[in-house]
Amino acid sequence: MGSPYLSSNEAIVLSTHNVVINTIPAEAILTSQRLILVDARHTRLRPQDIPFASIETVTIGENTAMDPVLSLSILMPDETRHTLGIVFPQAPKQKRIGERDEWATKIRESGLDAQKDGGVKPAELLPPWVAGELPEEEGEGSAPVEPKDDKFVNPPLAPRKPRSRAPAGGSRKLMTAGVVVILIIACVAGGFFLAPSLFGSTGTAPAVTPTPGSTPTITATPVVTTQPAIIATPEPSVSTPDVTAVVPAVTPQAMQEVALPQSGVWIRIEYDGDYTASFGTSGRMKDITGSGEQYYQIPAKDQIVDAVVQKTDASGGVLKVTIFNEGVPAKSGSTTSPRGTVELHADLRVA
Image (cartoon, rainbow, N blue to C red; front, top):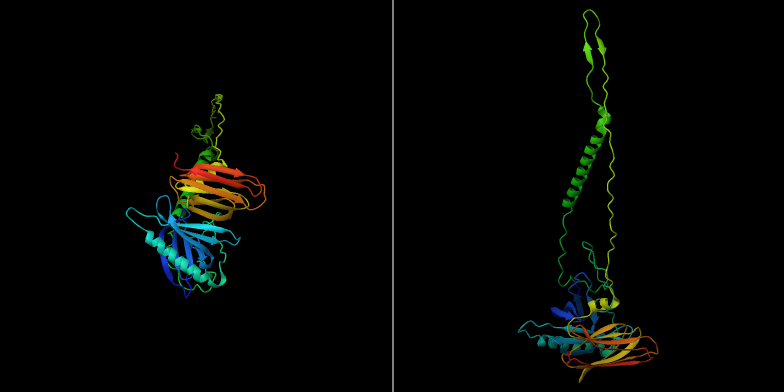
């Protein structure tokens, strides 16, 4: 996907190419009108635009690796809130706390200005920033996608170079050579099988005896060709055992574990309806509302983690809550009661 376009009255305020947003390596661009997120793994996907009016809260903290974290709460069209955790990874002897604080200050100020008149307005987030199937990427060699808004008239911020395509001449030559070889083999095989019928059987030439004063008489001596008897010898039968390929089954639980982050402390909430949740460590509890299956990172290490999740409807569906520590379930609970509640208390200090 191409790079984002700027409007005529838009300017870049901050940019960074080394952040991790909800476990996704990404690039972030802060302009005077919006926050732009770019998936570093799929550079041809359209960047995600987040208007300042949709950013409800801005908080700062650290993750379990003590990297600076900037958390944004985004109002969704269905009135739920989605959290985007922007991690600023630090190399050895590198400090990015100041960079995180600068981003937090600029986003907070821009959000207050944008919400001064109309308040918080919802924004739509697309995969990979929310759960779902990734949209199709642009094919190579396709025409660039024009921006939907006519006000974005400037060229891209940083156009990406298209990957070089291998020339097609080499493959065509190989295909032509293969066809020629096949034709030669077919001609040789046909000549081998048709030669006896074209030239007939070979034998002894007829004897010619001349007589003086008379016309020579040609006496043909027949040639008898004896064909050897061919005795067919039956080949011994060889029994081939049936071989059945055994493919190991992949359980749904194994598929979920593959997608689960393998580092840090995470909470997974699974419910088809809506719910409210409060989780974290003592003095650092976080309140959210959501629906469906969601993962949330908890900034904790070797601490006691508490979580309270409650249904907001009277459904009898299963609400399941699991706390993971370094990819391993530490505590789990579930309920099917209408407006039921799951309370977890996980002591991560115990191995």
